[in-house]
Image (cartoon, rainbow, N blue to C red; front, side, top):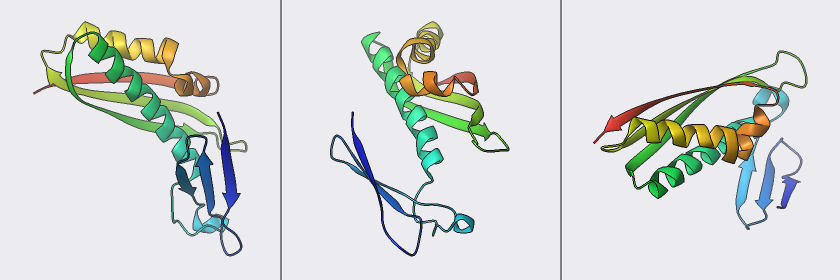
Length: 140
């Protein structure tokens, strides 16, 4: 896996990342740090990446379990250390899994497999942060 991150130049703290798969992502800093608030902060993208990683796992596992999943949303709330390095110290994941006749034990199993075995992002963040997982099923 590769990524190139390049500063957009003078006058700000905007950076462009080109991923190994050829996609571009813009990042920017807060105004108090010299940024112009044009894009997400790098740590916001890290949190979003963890959410995307685990949502991907849950949807894939439920589809493979032949569950009729229609939607999956993961809400994340994180706390960071007060001093540098301001690592995540606590992250709460809340899953809203929507579908028809979803089995609670299948949803619980999918989430557990994600955070214990498959989601690299969550497992890495768990080295510094206390991780909490809650979930609910929305019947459609």
